[in-house]
Length: 109
Image (cartoon, rainbow, N blue to C red; front, side):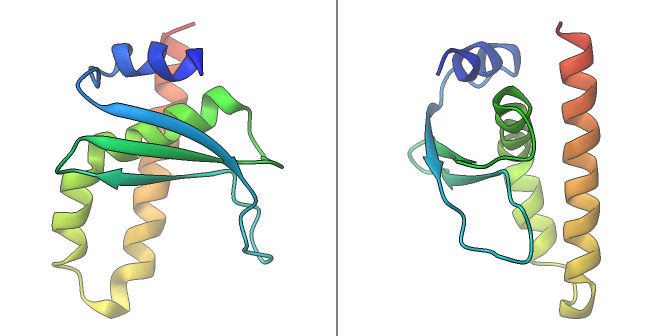
């Protein structure tokens, strides 16, 4: 997908092998638009985009690439947070990724 290569370059992720797959997410209680699977060791990632997304493909790609940029930090922090605070942590992480996505899309039109 051309948008992926464009955003890889903008976000300086050219040393990563990034694929995109369209999938049907299984959750029925939440309309999930995207996700990312990451293999840090081999610098490979797969962006998963819903066949029925809430957002457009470019927004999903940028959002998931922001998660990739934050991946090491996220997993370091996740291991430090008490179980009773995990939901709040994930809410804040999603809020941050969404804000950064919005900024990136606005500044790269």
